[in-house]
Length: 517
Image (tube, rainbow, N blue to C red; front, side, top):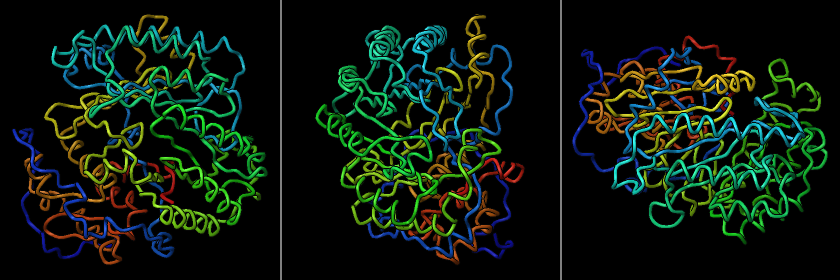
């Protein structure tokens, strides 16, 4: 970053965000239809020199403050947070299924590799106990929201691990139990619910997709990573292209509304040409969303990665070329860059929400359901309560124990399972609002911030504005008295822009984060 420079927006006043919120909301300044001729609506530009200049490790900002700011939770705090939750706020439910039948060598997650079917049945018992315990603390929903008084759910996601480690009967059992505890939004109409699950194509039974569709799941996500057989063998995830196409075809026929695929660049034995071939074949399958992840080789931290030989990995320059070629291919195929590795077809709800200025980001990644409280269940699951960023009420982020044994012990002892907690300040919520709008909409509108937080944003963020001087000079961003807009050259480096507004970052261990590219 450059040293502080004279700035046309300078002011000597010092302000703090106000807790007084406006009664009425202004028109949405983040909708791209309001500045259709802006560079922000143009395709991505991959500038190798600028990426190398600014590429450094940083958070992915699935929350702000990030999970590194978690502190041990005090007894009774989780129960109080749940009991005081606003019952008018819809819920987004997350269920963490930690089991996998196969170890993928690139994995950097806390998963349990097992082939014992009994594990999932036992785990469901613990999930049901946690659900009942939390549900009992929640206030009834108002009549206009839920005719039954049950908490109202607009979104549900099963992640892991491999949620399809559960048998079809267990998936039905879980869904039927949830119907007794919550009221769910219908799957059709203007305010349709979003119900998604991560699947492993190798672990699907003959009727699993049919069962999921009958249970009203309407979105799927699964990892492909690479279609090259040598790469698949090297990372211990062998799944032929014919299997991927079969899953896609059946899912389309069953009416799943959105299908996401994950790809990874930088894997062992990948080459520029082999990955380009994979991307071409994946585009032919027309997934609605694509996540393109950078493989970070950290065998000292992740045991599974010790199976991968460093000498089999592509060079850093080849990785940049792989990513550049992938971006070019997706641009040409008409995919819209959402941000942080994510692309979507322009008619996908995620892309539409971004263009309308209604995209949000939380621990589930990019989402349409920013008006929901996130309630997590299972080992390591995270909850975000009172999540409206500019609310005068405090928001809370909680995490369950990451150890399965400790999680189960807490449930057996009649306790709530959260062990870590963050209570955000009004300044945290101000900075979260800025960071999330930069990452979701490539823009922050000073007038909007002023109205929502009762400050003069230019005065409050004068140091950050000065620190962005180099990025403005390099045409990554454009700053004026209206706000800060990320330009096409800067969209791949939006995390770098957001990091300038992170007041915790200077004290964090940079090695804990992944690089931007």
